Length: 471
Length: 145
Image (tube, rainbow over all chains, first blue to last red; front, top):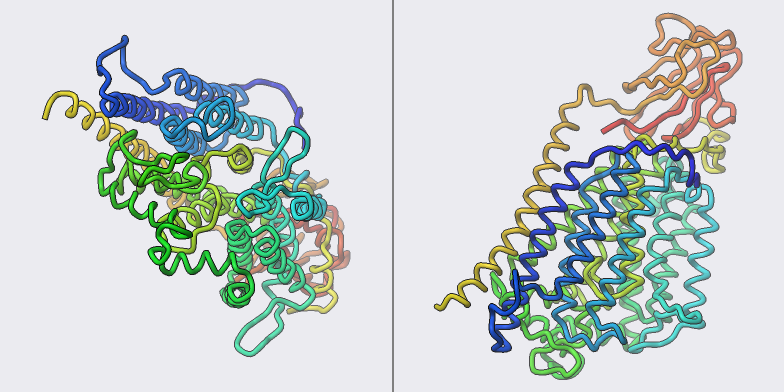
């Protein structure tokens, strides 16, 4: 990674980014005002007290918008021709998250309060995006060390298996000294980096040669091993960590990237069959998997027990209707659980809370923002110079998209509920920082003027093909 | 309905409207971007960038837009003329067959190399791979879209 290639500052205006940031900031100010007025109205306080526009915690919002504009300023100063859409889009998602966290009971997170803690993590996330988008000019440090990254990822996973702290029956959190985090968030990025390296190197082989098994065309047998390993890792995460969400995310991203690289549907079909078979066995063996699926099929069977969260989320969506109740007027209280409250709302059910307060219209707009992130990622992939960058960009944007789908669909009872975060909206540091890493990399990858990829060495796969002669 | 409730309603709807204003602005940019990409002349299948060329023909730094069949060699009738003393008249042919690129050596005197390995007959080439014909080195890149 050449961090300090040359420090000639050549500022280049980013007009689209600035315009979009201004629209996003206006939307956030309107949202904050709406939240403040609704709160005062509900509490019966006088509405016109204080000077100027009433805002719900205007300082936090000002710091956040200031952070976004600083990031914009730094990107202007570095003067790279990079994507101008991702920062405002992600900034708007983060701002909505800030409004939501201001609005929830503040005692959910330690001393600082929910809203302030989330503000700190959001600023951290913007800092990560800016640093990577401004400084990363070469991808050699990702491309050349793919097996090192894979080993690091597996090591992280094993460490969580052994030393992870169990919270709510899920062994997800790793605590090292004063730091604690959820490694599965970082694992998804490492997986995409490894797969991009592995698949781009062996693409010719995976496409051209295949072992036939009945109607299916399998990849050549030696190259099946990593895929079986992936399947085993996904299932072991379900068994040991009891983390269905991460397993689903990792396996879905793996299958999508396999399809992106080879354009062979049979690989995907085969992977899905293997996953469903594994899931069916786990349904019989593992009680926590069975509970999740039973809740999904009929949450009302245990509406005050295991199905409570899902039932309350469905009620929240129903209360919201088309236009929503308005920010601050919903019932998403968390700690004391009044009728209508949803446990773990700030991490697992922010989508349901937004569905209640912003209604169908608001939720569709938020899904639209995620679609924009995916579209930008796939466009960056389509215009990348080589396969590694293309697969990396596609994988990174789809990680965010698939994760948003898994948790939003889980909230809506479209698929079984899994505890995973809604990117840029859920409360939590690990999630915000790794998603910042993903978006920062996407922006850096969109620079076509960056250093050309390092000359490749002949891979073993291609040499094998050459030895065998013409296909 | 009193003024307070009315103003709360206006602010709520304003927030939702601004969310859609943002989406509309983004979609306009995206559409313009997509149209520009669609109107680019000639849908190229790939590009061949010149990495090193001691003879100056082709010029280092140039990039050629590729069709499905590209012939390479010293003869002036080739698609890409390689003016190098170690290149043969009809040196090699680069073809795109459905899903992947292939380089075929046409019996050249000094051979064709992919990432340093000699090509025996025909060999697959991936985006990012380097071809060497004589002293000239070329890199296959994805099409600009």
